[in-house]
Length: 73
Image (cartoon, rainbow, N blue to C red; front, side, top):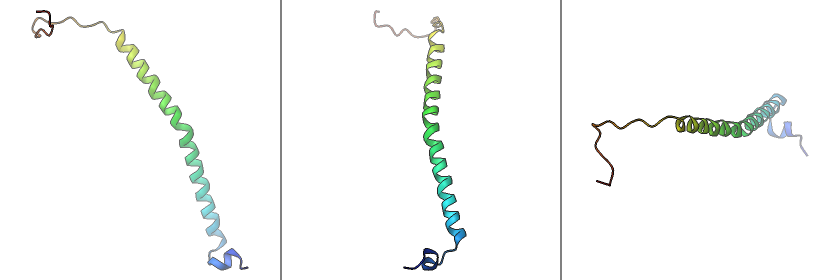
């Protein structure tokens, strides 16, 4: 059985480069997999904070120039 280096014609640095690319790819995949739940949680907490902030704002008084939208007329 032929050696892989002889059979394909690739040299040792080629396989080291491919291994390094796989390692970098796996590392990036792990970072994205770990960072996405954190980003989702931050977005959710920002929405809650914004909703809480807007719920404490007093409603504005209606101006007399605005048309009436009530059905009770």
